[in-house]
Image 1: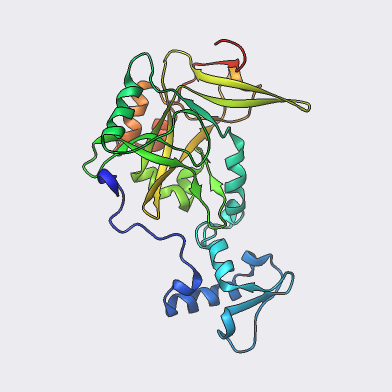
Image 2: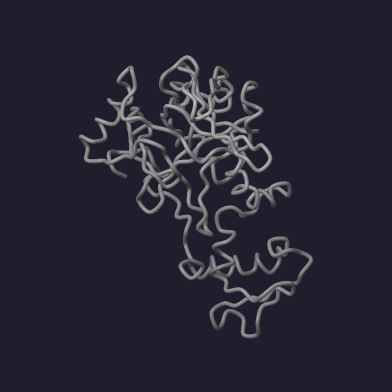
Length: 294
């Protein structure tokens, strides 16, 4: 990874096709699919077409259309690996949870302290380009993370994990991220901080939506807790969310985890407990409608 980002030497490949797997792996997965019908809407019977593994590995679910093993494998390879019985529905919920917080935040070219300008300048000197202004999913922005020597540095990362079906996972619930296979490794080794001036959230009033800018009340620059991974040689991140602070509960039922000054240092110190650090989230936030001066 560029500039020595702290990632495993051989990161797990999460987007393999079924046909890319070894023969013994394909046979084991085929057996597992036949036996574990919960993955294909039990109690329907999963029957293998005559001829075993011939002709494209087609499987037929009695309750649904015929599927190619490649598409079945892609739909379960990351999120639906065997977990506890209570987690069988977690794969389906993960992307739904991504909708529980805003999908926008704002990043100015600089802040009053010059901290943000310094971060962007470091990236520019290394030839990295990041977006400022209103940030949307898939945008590339400055993110703080550990390099291989566990030194905190700015990196350019793209917002959103890509799921096997192509959808983006832009948020993850901080309360449960450590329990999910998709995030367990990142909670231990791949934590990051996403700087922003504020984030945006919408309050629903009937058919009307009111857009609010929400910021940390006692700081010009806020830092959101995040997790990252590498996809096809590119670093991507997701933002952790939590229950909202009381003063903004009327706007939305989730908010990003904004860390206090001490907590943001602990978050990037991989020896510190992740759950305890997340519990130090900032409660002092301010808000205003975007067409009103803050």
